[in-house]
Length: 530
Image (cartoon, rainbow, N blue to C red):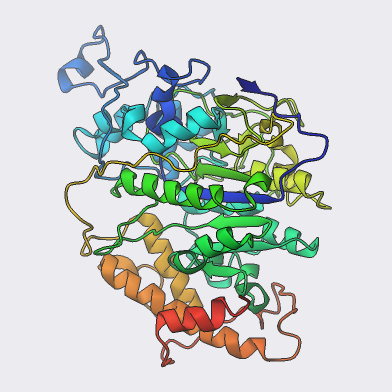
């Protein structure tokens, strides 16, 4: 069943939107083979292919036919992590390495550079990026796609890595970032978020985190007055679901790091996808058991494609720059094309089983579903005053996926149990991936270590996962301690930050000690409102 993206019930029944953003997988890689269950899904058949790099002999023979690598259904546990830098994505999408001259030609995407780019990084990696999971390998997604809705036209907001795309999720702009901007990270990114818009309109929001939240990338969310909206997932998410206390806008953050007994569940390679499936199952079942269930719309989406193949060309025409900022040298990106298609699953008792959401029908002829669609849809459902940027004003909204006039009573109470893919346990001594490095650098801006000469790069050069976890927990503990003191000062609780006055966005001296444990600090600072 197809959903008309601009239709919604006369009085929208949704009072709680829940957002969960997983890491670094393309649509075809995770959901492409779901087409075998529902032919309406624009997935894969196995006919899709990419040319492999030519051998030396083939390069000399002008008449040789390129060897093709076809898309397979044998994806399983994946290590290493494919390249998903700005320049790598350009080659994956356009089939040629990035040059200023090549980019200036503005040719349509060919989606035929994934295999070549991967094989150049490591022999055999092409077969990994040109593979997808069989539906039974991701049983939670198989059930959710069958029971609710999948969007087969949701794209990353820009052809770049994790941090810039995650900034779009709640703010409809990366404020000019196309990679990790460690200088901007010190102050925090200044763009307004949809959380602030909700707060201003008298609605509530909550961020449920497992490690210090990536939403601290935003400057304003570091303010003490918003800290009460951050909740420890393991302590409070199920409790709030059970008691019917979920806020209007809910953000769920994963375990981005893994240590013994606590494997990462964000799906970032080399993390086990089955752990992500378990996490999504846990979140769904908590929401399903909540008295608020009939008022919930739950969106699962991925931040970017992580270097994995997708066959749908990325939109490259009619995409507006959100705030007229041009990206840094050497790419000078104009933010005028989207990234690769990513998985998106929408869940609500107001959705018919087997619904497929295709391209939006507006608000503009070139509008697409992308991460800015979240802010656009929240604005529409909650009747907020203003758009955040020109991008969410342009993006398609997805309230039309609510294609029933009454809520279903047959939604599954529990989901299938995933099967572990990785034989070994977490490797605590592993080096950090790029996003983990950024989270450590963010933690350094919270405790004052950004003033040291080791910031930003030396501090993450040789750090292991276990050491990184200890560091970010300690940094967050110090940050909470400072916030507790600031909250008692007159005017700070409701103060508004600006680029010139950041009294209410605290950082700490790196040498300050605190006597409380991390858990004690979480209780005293984060959940003081409960």
